[in-house]
Image (cartoon, rainbow, N blue to C red):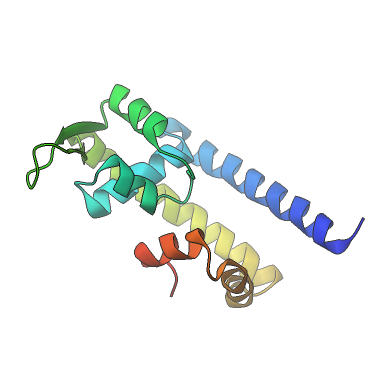
Length: 152
């Protein structure tokens, strides 16, 4: 098996295992990693339309309608009317949604700190990010990361 294939499967497996660990960290909040990303994006950008939300999410390539519906059912977000154009609906965090976001941020910080320490110990975090950013240049993922100020 060539190195490109091996890397692809190892990288994908590492991402999968990291998401399992992050899901476990979020489990007591009753949200998934993808749902937590929706809540964080709304917290930073609300109100946003479903289309705008999709343009900002890393976790979802298609429309995030199922993610949004699940969060509406949990009472964490709601759909309202745009103040600038009543023909459009936009998404807002509910009171409960606003209350859960700081807890998500704390869990995310703890998880990210552990991940960064692991990478720094074993590879060099800056080197790894530099290589991955080079790979992502010119992609929709680069655009999304830049829109969310995560590219620097």
